[in-house]
Image (tube, rainbow, N blue to C red):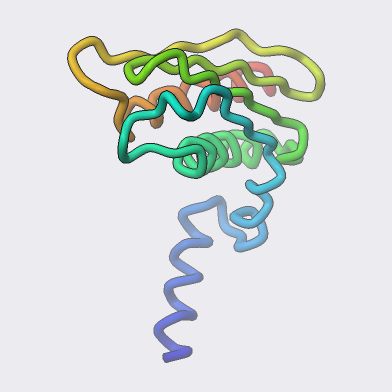
Length: 126
């Protein structure tokens, strides 16, 4: 069983910039969700923050920045719309919004929001 776990960890480490330590540091990214009670079924604060931490952690890793430099505040505006404000090293980044007009929010919408925040982190870090 240990042999099966070892290659799996190596694979995960390779996908995350080459170190297992980088995977665990994403938890240092501060993430909060306001009005979480408005989230549709299937989404919760853990899902939102995990997605933000994954994308943000990868961007921070590429930029050589510490994960604790990033904090993100997500606001659930409705069952169909999210907004987020990120702060990187004390600097407020542009606010981002994502919404779906014909159905409730889903994992793809959260990924789009996370990607937009990661893009801002990358742009500031250059």
